[in-house]
Image (cartoon, rainbow, N blue to C red):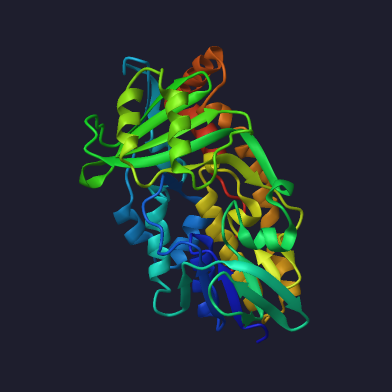
Length: 394
């Protein structure tokens, strides 16, 4: 076996999944994570498809369903909170033959990481600052830790990948902005709760939704159209909250109460709705996986599942090639890129469904949503969008 020692940057979804499968096949993975500890919480994701299949092979389905939420209804309301459209969420479970759950992204990441915790080296609160490749390995410089040597490096560090920037160039070269921004947070004691329902309110170019969590908490999700020139830093929480107040401050429904709940939130997520589009996912001894390589956008609803499937395929390729990285990286991309390209093309159209830019667009979206209550229409639309046309190797 060649190239056993592999550094993985990122302890989100893709990184620990890759570490798990590499460990099973005799490699020695090490994870480095910028955050001081494993990130918990996060926004709600729908989980199905190839990623669900990988989770099953990892023995995770029982705990993921325990952590998950069974959404019974998607309800669209007007400015007074009256139901104006929506559909029964069981259509998703039916279209996937029950292989579907909704859970918080942080819970999925935690469950995956628990499988490797204590079995591999993880360096929290650290990041890569430089990579120096030679014919037999990669020398890695860190922000605080001493320089180290690895055979291979994998960037699993998300849409704003540090590894990708060092090896492939500036983020702007690979980012496709889809014209929207999104935010999410959770809060205790919010007075309005509809258990089992995803309740959303939309007006032209803006949507906000809420859903009830366990323990008396509620989660909120925003999507709004905006030009790319938003001057808000990735870590400037005060500026992010201020922009949300400007965007939703004059809106109806519960927006005033939701913004008040946001004031005390310490888990705000805020980012552009964007995709990572790259012609190639590797260079020499460095490869990318998950959002770092092929982010489909948060609105696609399948970023975590694709991250797990890609990590599985990369680990399989390295094992099958006995560590021959050039052969493995090429096989990984050859197997997975057709599905990724199809998912990204579909996801680019999702923004207009979440937050249509005109009043007419909102009305048309609401009508189309209600048609999901017709079984034949639901089967045609949901079945097609939830299908992953890929066979995972054993």
